Amino acid sequence: MQDITFNFSKIGDEELQMGFMSKEEFHEKWRRTIQSFTENIDQDDPEFISIREAFMQRFKEFGFAFDNIHEVMECSKALNEVLKKLAELQKRNKALMRKYNGDAKFARVHKRIREENAQRKARGASPIISGYEEEILEALKAIKLDIDQKVFDRNDILKKDAYFEQTVMSQIKQGMDTLGIKGTRDDRVFIQSRISSQYLTQYNATYPGA
Image (cartoon, rainbow, N blue to C red; front, side, top):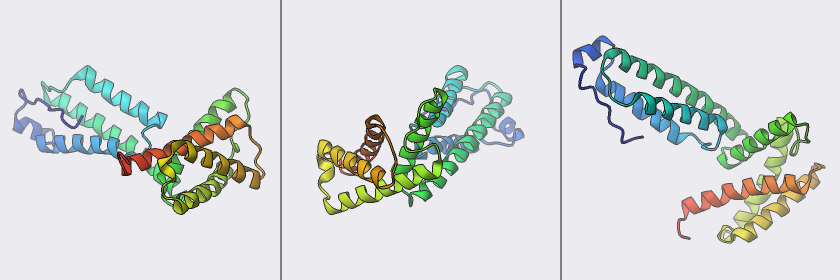
């Protein structure tokens, strides 16, 4: 998306200025929109994916060549709407992150549990950990503390995926038992797979080829 070029060949600079926008300002707004997509901390969020797909579909249909100032202004308006939606979504993401001391990994895990619980509620099934946000937060923070300590004590633990996954499962069971949270093995597997994936993805991105 960063490499897309817009064609204003039929629109003069004076006409654009009448629409209160220059070509440079339009391209800057496009750049900020792409940056907002890139910087969102949760690329797997269904709401984020929906915004991105709608955005791409719009420009797939309308193209990147403008024949008149009306088309430019309509596109600019659409970019404003996308920027607003992404800013609101990122604001909520960061608010959740702060509850995990800035750890985006657990903010994403929390959201995956929240989404799964919404689906379970719709079909009358029991939630993972709890149906209450604060109880999910309490449990995940306890699990996070234990896992972070394991990683700190053994900085090579993330080099062995299977062993790390077993360690995470053990800490999840221990944490849930300590807090008196009942859950099935499937519940623990759900949590374990999301947490392990977050740690391993972060590690592999930080130390590629390690």
